[in-house]
Image 1 (cartoon, rainbow, N blue to C red):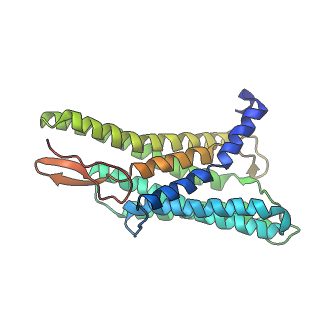
Image 2 (cartoon, rainbow, N blue to C red):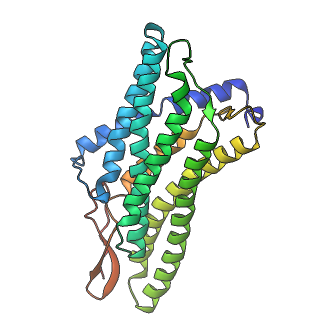
Length: 285
């Protein structure tokens, strides 16, 4: 991939990817400014918790890089690991929220798949952290500042995320197509539904497809590389944060609509009680 771009272009993309924490910090300020900072245990507010955890993880990552030359290698890695732990819970909440939104669109009220997604994602990410850092934390002699990426644990994690992204994307397209046909038969305000369909489907679908592109690309990269023990080199161009943080912001902005309810004679209308930032009550006109 990097062969298609000049070294300066690759460096610029890598620097942009590294600085995406600033977007998360700005998003956090935006949440505080709009009084959209409350959280609870309901999945509808997980998108806010995701931003808090992402900000903490970026803070620790930037802190570790700032003090790398003035601290021991093991202390440096300890801070890195702490940031990874926050990211593990952040991604678990993110994909749990995606399942929640997908189920809301389907009108499915099951809760256990949402929490199961959180647990499995955190578990797989924890395995990745252990696989990546465990052998370098024993002593200063064993420690290296940048451990190589583990192979299988990363594939397991990204494959799980890809399945969620593919599944929810497919569900959105099928469900919205069926709903549009039903709405036409009901003589519903088509222009209103079209606005809703474009807004809600595109937000979640773009987020899923955007993250899916990164996860599939990463999996293909590691699978195609020449095996070097159990460790392989990372992507030549770092775009994971660039895409993931952008898609997270999209999820946050679209998180205010998502609870299915019955409004008069119209079923499966959204209300705006989902604890996010957005605009979106659809009513019969």
